[in-house]
Length: 400
Image (cartoon, rainbow, N blue to C red; front, side):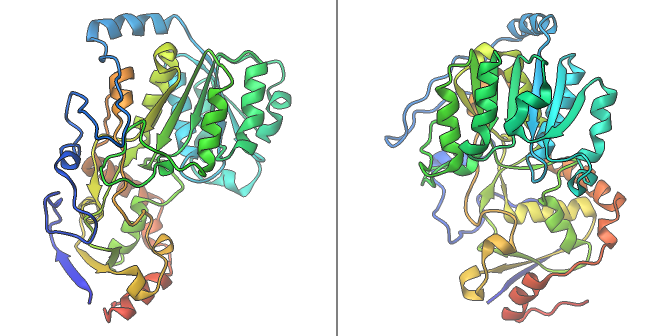
């Protein structure tokens, strides 16, 4: 039976709300929801203890920042041509350029392809205006594409498997690149009874990103690091996240959420991901050999995200909860997030790099909704076939 909730003035629910069908969160788990603990707690027996050096003081950081200002890097970003990761490379390049580094962005494919007509690629002129370079081609032929250009740092923000990343990593090693960075995925963690995921937790051995991480670790770069992102928002992201909720809210449609809606996840603004990467470039010795969860430091429930989106849009919200199995649909196709508690904590970045997150979902979603309306997506004709199947099975009427 469907559970409908109509909300006129959406507010974020307490994380201690009513029970759900998922395993209950432990006391330790809840203490990390806002990730405010300044120390590293002792981990349970199934996790290897992890110790990171204390975060540098403000004065020490000022000295390092001054030194970094005199040590500008030549950076090559191998960028994906679709999906959520593409926007990471764009923001990373922007941030490096603003700090005075030299940046070249190599995007997979052809500059004239239809994919380049979408953001963030339509904003590449901003990189060029800031002094950056943009090129296109097959990353397996990176040496031919960049020619005699020299680089100190390479970020692979494209490959999801070893076949794709190996040619880039091998070229970087042979070309004398000092630092190699790789965008992996927090999705490689094995599900655990304790959350959030922290660096050092068990990963899925058969995950393609894992083989890449192991390979690059064995190439003996002067510095290498791995970054594992989750879900992200930000201008230029061409993979739906908050838009999925806006699409239904502005059309006065029910928002179908699988399960109880109390599942916890992590959503970061891409500026936080790029700032973490930039700190690794400017603190390459500290970042060497480290794995960083490239995420924000707060979690949000599915229902909470829906309510924040409705608040940003200034509209009423009707949530419908359903059981995917009972309805007979694949939750992966019906909903943009994993139907489970799934979030990580940026512990290593805080402890090692002195990173501080700035993601503020209530404010960031207002900005995202303004852009959503600006591009006219709120008026775009849309089909909601899977939603309709869910609502029909639950006997929920939809006013068209």
